[in-house]
Amino acid sequence: MYLRQMVPLLFATILISCSTNEDDYTDIENEETSENQNSSPLINTSILSDFFGQNIDLDNLENYANQTIPDYITRDNTNGNVIADANATLGRVLFYDKNLSSNNTISCASCHQQAFAFGDQNDVSIGVNGSTGRHSMRLINARFSREVRFFWDERANTLEEQTTQPIQDHAEMGFSGQNGDLGLDDLFTKLEALTYYQELFMFVYGDVNITENRLQESLAQFIRSIQSFDSKYDVGRATVQNDNQQFPNFTTQENLGKDLFTRPPNQNGAGCITCHVAPEFDIDPNSLNNGIIGVFGNINAVDITVTRAPTLRDIFNTTGALNGPLMHDASMPSVINAIEHYNSIDATGNTNLDNRLRGGPGQNGQNLNLSIEEIDALEAFIKTLSGNNVYTDTKWSDPFLN
Image 1 (cartoon, rainbow, N blue to C red):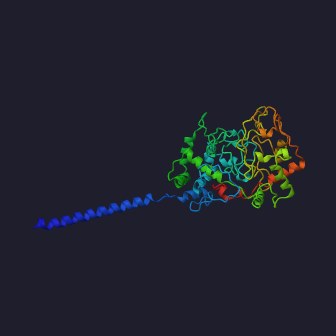
Image 2: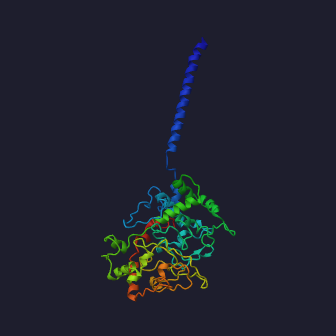
């Protein structure tokens, strides 16, 4: 009697137990599925605010990816590393972080300052172990060039490659891995220990693993986002069909300078456009040495390997002053000096001089015979290539609290 009463009770208990276990399993499965579908890892924003205040807001990222670019700008060396707001934000922090140097004193921004179109007013930049060998190149509009190689001697095949080479230079940032220097792996360990990078890399990549590829990817996206298309030239260019037309917003002198810039030497022009093609005013990737063969600090040395140059945009800042000396050896303190150099080139001993600067077959250097009035007009035109916004836009500014 007792056994017959217990069997139904035991059977019911088993059913209840099985039902409860199945429900519990379903709940756990749903929770795991929900977590896997969450593409935004939890970020401790208070950690970021301790370092950056409101300068970095992951809920309201700055617009790096979808900036307005004029229709007449067609060059782009992105090569697949498409700008994303999150990556460029990380790149901004990396660009300004002195922790990327071996003694925590130098950042990328130390030699590429926003106030000077991301260039340097020093003749040669100062690194953790002394001065660098060449004047720092302005990074303005680095994205918009036919030349995809970087550094004055084009030793980096892409901007991505360029971004980590200064870090690995003994003189510049000190993580060379040679002659007693720490190496890149030591830098990665150092950065992974910083709480704000733990949060930022988790936000961008979903984990805190720091690699050279990730540094290159994010730094290059930030640098490519730095653009300047609000100059007097751009205002005028938007109103005409091409650069050969008179710009209605230009002075007579500025239009003369533009005409000289675009007209070839055999038609009494300066022919600047053959190497610096409008409207980007970048450098022709087939250019050779421009006749400047000096080595800073060594009057007996010769350097004919320099074949790259920055864009001619934003040579001047909003005050009308130069954003630093011109040429790789900082040998030109003014645009007038640079124009005078091209006006009369002596190619003696320069086996790598660009043929367009030889003055014709069998000649040893060009003589443009520009007048003082024409030289002044060329300078006036080059001044129209400088904008305003790039010097003050907060999305390119130092994010660290000072």
